[in-house]
Length: 567
Ligand code: ATP
Ligand code: MG
Image 1 (cartoon, helix red, strand yellow):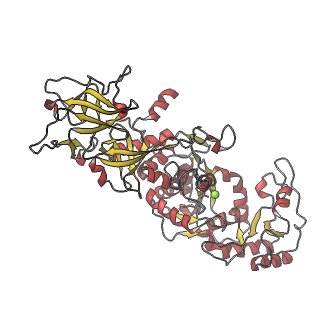
Image 2: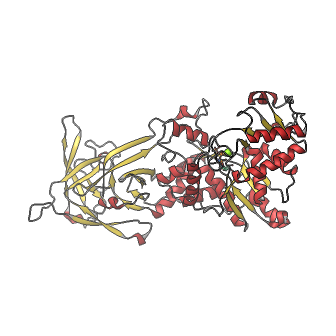
């Protein structure tokens, strides 16, 4: 089967690369390029992260720079070692080995604290005794002025004393915060005296119970970039309004090095799925899906289990490129990259998902009265002759798909029907003669004859048939379970109508078929292998459960159809 190729990846030129190129040409940052990928270990990576990884690592590589991996681990409530390990594993699977050492924002807690004392001494930060509700009530809003905290004008000495006692654990969780002292009337809300430290007792996955105050994202991020010598801090558009704060902190610290510069790009969004870790975690927690590696999720581990090749995800990311405005890509585009890659690499196999028995009445028996077994030679991958051929057993009792037979064929049905001849792939022409039904009237067996002169699937007299069907020898078949998937969300933009994406969940997003009959070669499939079941699609062998296959994608290029419709 041949399929239209997915579009070729574009040459890398976009606003980020143009910016970095200009910096290198002008000798900004001494001509250095250093980026970082900064995941928070509060969940596993999703395909949106793959885009960020492709941007961060890609740009560093293209400009002879380096990209580090830094865990943004400033919140002990949400972060766990299992996510750190999982992110490292997923990154490696995607094809990006993180350069050593792996970095952690938590390694900078001491330095960040020292800088916080510096800001306090300069009168640029203060301890606020109000709770978080009062603080947010005073922030005001767009066009609505903020109100200054009654604790804003404490002396540096008083603030320093309180900050030290916060660190020493003298105060209850949530009872005080450290805030930057900037401007409660600033038009950018991020600059209205943002919180820098919160008191929070919890076990941090790396620092244990050493700290009871934790820096906020804003207070940690730019400083961590600076400590590492990051030049281009690339992040997604929602941080656009934080940039002024990022710069403010850096400007007010005694930094011995160049200040990194933050630039934002659009997040990757895909139709029919959600990409926020918070929402993904909720689907996992409430049992909507089986875990972070459920094949219906857009997580890298879900996609891997589903059989998405890492190379196809990388190609997709470079194809979509980066832009400055948010947009949502059709999931069919990603799938077309998956299909293109698998068409090239996946071995072809035969599997019958909903079997019905096909009995060849004129099939010969040997001297002992046993049905003869013919070994039919079949091509492993027409796209890659190097994959060679294999021998598949064929005998007088076979399984075919229920839907490949119709007792009363509707118009345009060209598959098997009484009196009609079809080809069984690579084997023989067969003609249906009769059916056997159960007491409820369902067809349980199709009777047929075969033409011994059509061995290999061609008739010497040149007669044609309208259909070629896949099959499995009943005596040799291996039983398998196959999971078929629909989109997890029926709506293109989950939650668009009601605000709650879970309203658009498809309760039938997975269909498990047990009792599927597959050719014996599939029993040798290794976990994680992806094969093409002829005429049915690509299927990935589950990494843990033997003889469980997940449908990766179907064979039809839906993206091509969408493009045709759009023209
Ligand atoms: P989420 O919103 O899914 O929880 P996040 O931004 O909180 O994601 P982080 O672990 O903080 O997740 O993200 C690490 C990096 O990946 C950040 O630089 C972030 O900008 C980037 N990133 C996250 N989601 C996407 C996405 N959908 N597309 C592109 N980049 C993303
Ligand atoms: Mg985040």
